[in-house]
Image (cartoon, rainbow, N blue to C red):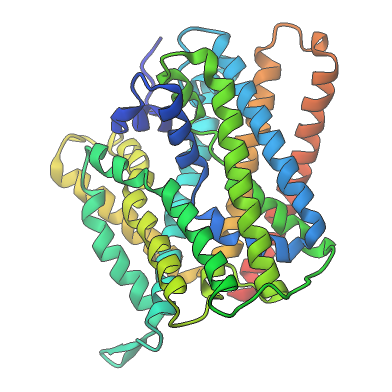
Length: 410
């Protein structure tokens, strides 16, 4: 196979996450949970408040559909022994253009997630240390903006590292962090006096596109699923890995959604940690735990993009060129984070435009293309076409709603 100019995200992560090599069933489950458990846990209550109690059904539906499309990716990999990554699937199905499209969506998703990390840092540090604005040369820098800049300066040196193996192992603590955040929110409601008294709304059709888009963001682990499958000692167990991961993550997401909505109802902010009472021990634990993930995962998110950019430059092995490119990428994400400081809306945009495409539409399209006789699929063909149609509608409506909300709040 001809060496491609575009390196796949999974290939990058396979080199960086050395623990993926020859993993057991249990370890693959942990890696899968880490891929699915991210900052989306913070906006799950907000998603429920946007759509009302009925939209919990869509959380379950999204989990089932994303688990199924994960299985479709596994079947696509069975079509050829050289298929190891997601862009490999795109190339096998649609040629070089398919590879480029898959890689483009994945890189863009990583870039926007990196921006989310910076917004998350600024919002939560401002919550911990309010009224910390400073004046520089007659210009006032607000607390949130200042903390965003400070966090970026601390994170920046980690982006200069080319071998992120150790950092990747540290980031695996994100699974534990997600559980601790849920436990802290429960403690705030049960012990710290917030209570669970809000009834909320049964349904809110106007907020449904935002809610579904946020749910899609929570299950956007498909970019690494082929790598997880490839790395397993016994690849036949990958279907069980998907089932375990989606069951546990859905339980965690559902618990956080119900707890947060019962505590704060329709007054929920884009991150539930911003609603927690100031000065309480549980609030500090939740926020400090939340702050860990960006510091450990930002570099992993931005490195595949940086490496792809470096490959287009002469002397791409130069340490100076590498640092320059990664610093420019960091500056660009900081600028966007300061201009568009809307965590929930940006997350909904990522979920609608990118996550639904990567997690729902592309797996179905590739599987239909690779299948020798799609008509022989019977009922499964109906299910796949339904996912493509509804997924496209949700992507269009969710993207429109998110962009409109961001523009309205600029």
